[in-house]
Length: 251
Image (cartoon, rainbow, N blue to C red; front, side):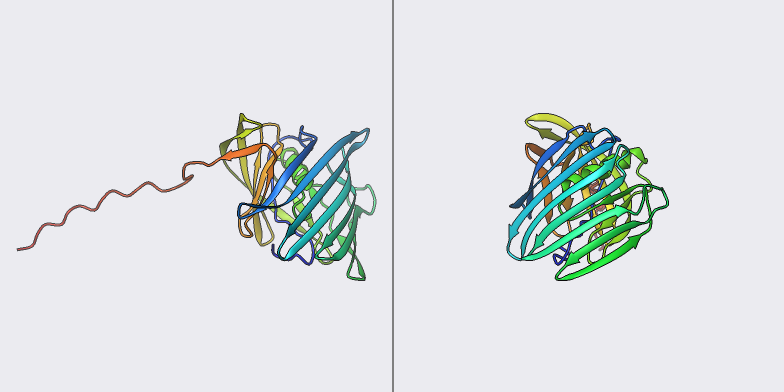
């Protein structure tokens, strides 16, 4: 992926203002069709919002990646606190991210510890911000929920790469597709999220649950266990041009 020295996922969105009715999910992580790891998330409702957790494990040539994230969200899916621990090619990375206060104008603090160095970065506040590490399906669930609540506008990604940054998310909606989930036919919503210099294709179900995420530039995909996307028939392909008229024979 673009930079395995730290975390960055270009990523994603679709439809329902809760972090998906499916409160947990397990995924296979693959590159170019070959399984290289697993990822999972779990959401638990609380009186004031949601507790979420994510686990990711990838082992492949050039990348040994393990991630554990715990997160506290408000009932509107706004970030309250997140703690991330990761091992990237034998190097430990720890990140704590939270608003300075609960006011809407409070800056977001991101404290990063990696390679024996610690940094603190202040980011501009955005209610529609999602903490978005690489390969994290729980972050994509939250992004899908916020996309619905905010009509696909005002979305931002907190990218825990180097000292941390916040990037706008631009969404493009494509025609629905088809698939199967646990053997049953399902309508699949398709969106593309553009973040910084990358894009991620997001596929979600009728209940806004994340089914699949693809990063075409790197060849990575997260596919929910039991889900199969039905390949569309050359979507958007131009019609075959008619044959050119025969030219008269010149004497």
